[in-house]
Image (cartoon, rainbow, N blue to C red; front, side, top):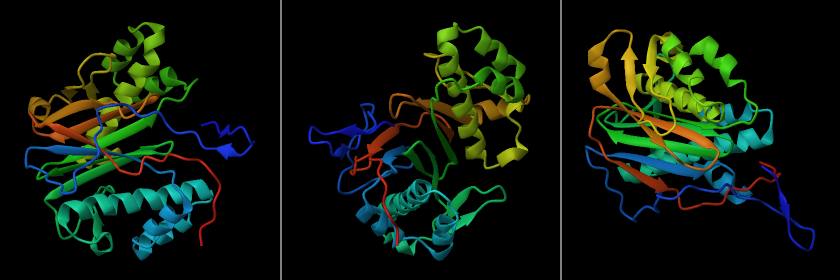
Length: 271
């Protein structure tokens, strides 16, 4: 992201252009049993906001933050975990500091005291998505569309033969978008299942053509799996691809924008 300058020579941070259809939340949040809420938020924040989130983190989260070499990565981690605590705390009516997390065998996070409130998160280039549901597994993935990304080479190593054929059948100008459609849908599905790297990416097929509905097409010969899960494309911002995988069908998605929209890039210090 490039930085701009005002007429007096002072640097002025640029902001990520956000896609429409993401609403500011009401004062009182209600999550129905058949709903999926997806939150969009910036991880680039002013120093005071980073400090506020730092104070809500647990000791192990602070230790994880301290292991980041670059300050920007460390601050984004702090904001990302702080936002997760703030969002989940809003649904539960508790202070963010009171939340306790546990982790599945492959690292999928869950709440210790509220296992029925399911969630997942993803971030890329200072933008984050948080998906929240009740009583159904959920996964979300977000990727920045890097220019000159060697997508055909990556697809050859990780995609199924059917997906590779579908990707190469696209016009050249659509293949990059097709690759990231495929990648985010596959990652969201794996994250929802919570199986990590034990589920190989070439063991199942998803749709990928731009404009085609997101769907799980093949799951290692298990037809029941196709009915168990549904996928949806998300459009959080230009230059990004994202996907949602949710257990079950016919669930409405409500898109929320975290109230602090500032997406800035500047150097700061943490205590």
